[in-house]
Image (cartoon, rainbow, N blue to C red; front, side, top):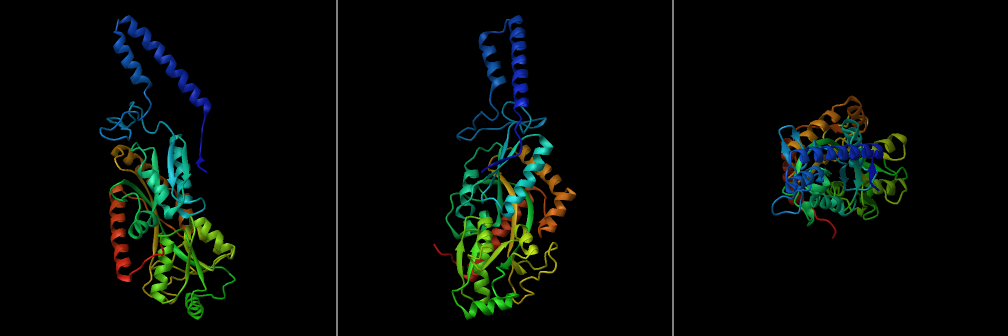
Length: 376
């Protein structure tokens, strides 16, 4: 269910009364000047036009103007003038959901405008991402992007959007290692022991993922290729449901997002066998890398960031980028992300777009070289 950070009906009522007073004053002035009825009608339409109501030529998406004063809506008002929707294409409880709420809350605190986190999980993130791609290019719809949704899934499946053509980059928010975790009932304490157990029981161990074609799915498939083990993939509708299945011992292991798994490892509910990056996570320095733990050459990195539908005004993208960069730099945000095993990022829209392009090229080569395929 969407999460909204604010709504103030009193403020809305005040704004409506002010608008009414201004309209009454304009009527008197225009009558005095004997302006024609047609001109009066035109001015009233401009005064009462809904933000973003103008249409872009040849498209159903509302157009948004840019003024010398900075980003604005079609009625000349400064952005933002209404609630912003931030789509997270996974159910609540995953790493991208945590970042979405962090960013949404701080944007509300800075702008005084509601930010609604809209969880639209399913199809490895493709459902929510498609909804964003089909939304208006007015800066009022944002979407959380991850390696799963705009890199892995489009490389392995036919998805109803193009990650580079249908979106404009806003900002790279964080890079997050995956972590190989097992239920405490599984009798292993290292990646080497897990490999030995899996080889002794082919097809008996089940690993959960956040969905077909996600990074956690590919992490498991790559582990199978590199180690030569036979494990069964069990897809869920997001990282939260996959983690809950593991906590309930419905599956034996998961290549999960460290950002959302860290608390369960620290509480002893899950056992960590290794992180999937080349170096240890700053927030969990006692957990070895999988390469250190006996799986050389293995590396999988999850990341998240924010996109907008293609065609959003550059001034609005620049404002979003500037504000979210400031949010990421806040000491409390840095501390939270690092403690959870994530690496805060930031940077420009151009840098984020180049990062996505490089990640697509990297994983396309891995998939080609390892002949990785998923169950349809």
